[in-house]
Length: 115
Image (cartoon, rainbow, N blue to C red; front, side, top):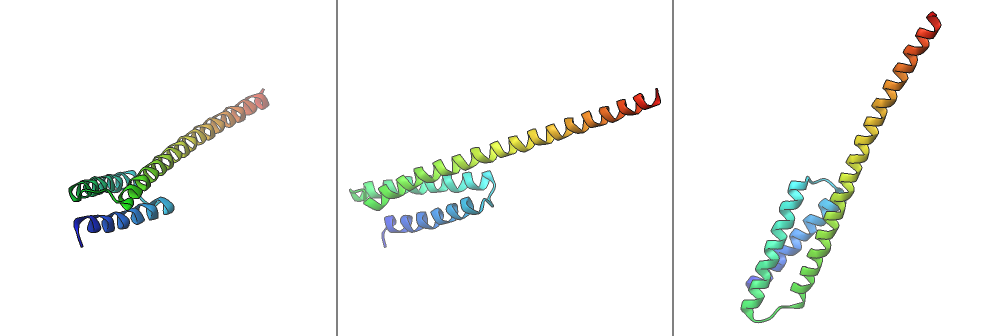
């Protein structure tokens, strides 16, 4: 087994791990960033190993394309999570303001009744 085959096996394992975390949404941004960076580093190592061997195989190009797709997917997922967090924050703010209005309304009703 040469260097390229070892790197491809490592890339396949890392890709599976990334997909598992993306599907389950159970990893923090730091973990996902680390896995993506490791995968990009392995792809660069594979490209270098292929250059040293004098050819770039189809599987290396396919892995590069998968890497781009996976990175785009991870970035989209991150954007969606940030939007969700922003919406939750707005929802919490609106609930707080609603409670304040209800409290003020309740106090004004009490004042009206005492007059």
